[in-house]
Amino acid sequence: METMEPTKNDTIKIGDWLITLIVTAIPLVGIIMLFVWGFSSGTHPTKANWAKAMLILVLIIIVLYIILFAVFGAAFMGMMNTDMMNDY
Image (cartoon, rainbow, N blue to C red):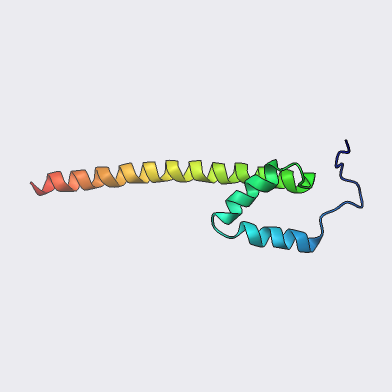
């Protein structure tokens, strides 16, 4: 069984990277394709590693957004609660 080891001549072309970036910019399709490229056995190892790194980055951003919304949501709710109590 042959393994696909990247060689010096086995590089991903600029056009392929441009198509990859355009596809990942499409909402929902991009996330699905990151999973396909990251965990498919037929994907070039460089592209697979890039896709896995992008999935980790997306996960970190989602966690930061959840924390941000929780903090600002709690602050906003606390501010609304004190404003309502001051009206009485």
